[in-house]
Image (cartoon, rainbow, N blue to C red; front, side, top):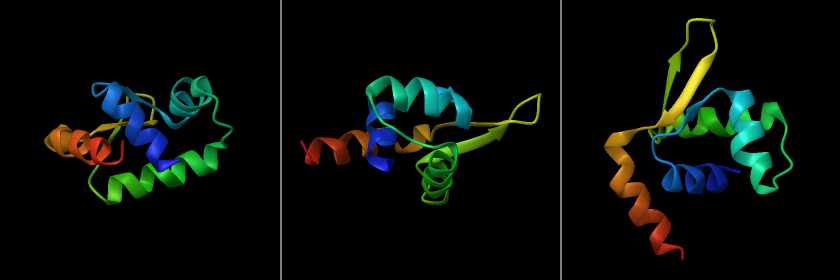
Amino acid sequence: MVWLLLGYLCAHPDAKDTVEGIEHWWLRACGATVSGMDVKGALNDLVARGWLIRRGSLVGRQIYGLNQARRAELQELLESYT
């Protein structure tokens, strides 16, 4: 799932969403069958590794998006696997 998330962010580097939005719009839209708990775990892992930034929203939900400081590094990483 981490690779799916990173791939999505490489194609859509300005994308930001909640766990629910990422589950529905980013992952299920590409055919992945995932649970919210799995998505949250993968997102937390990517935050811990510095790939994502997590911010609070006005309604108390967490918003996740690419750490723009690592955008070029992500592009290089994914290109090395294609």
